Image 1 (tube, rainbow, N blue to C red):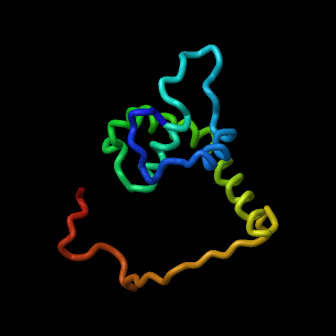
Image 2 (image 1 turned 180 degrees about the vertical axis):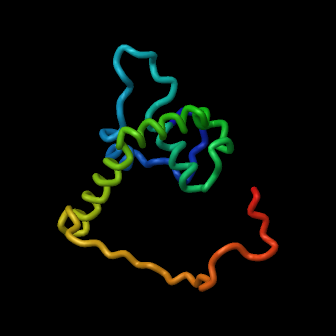
Image 3 (image 1 turned 30 degrees about the vertical axis):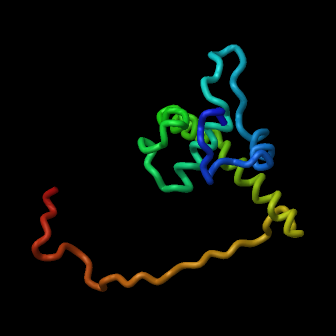
Length: 128
């Protein structure tokens, strides 16, 4: 976190970053030096996810929203967030004294009432 940025409740604590840091890709060697730290990028992603804010409304004391969103997309496509999820799930299960690999899952669904009569209703414009 830059020294002049205020902290947000969504920011990672040092202990949390210590767990995540090894899972986040490092800056590529030989390329342009990183403008932002990986921790700042992750903090900005977490801010948007936890607040439900739009990318364009990311506070100005974070890195530029376009940069943060670009990292998020690349990391999603590379499977980084899936690996983060899997590692955190395994760690949590071990801390709870459970088998690190879940052996079963349960899904729950809610009933949604639908009309028995389908098709176009009178008065609806379907030409759009």
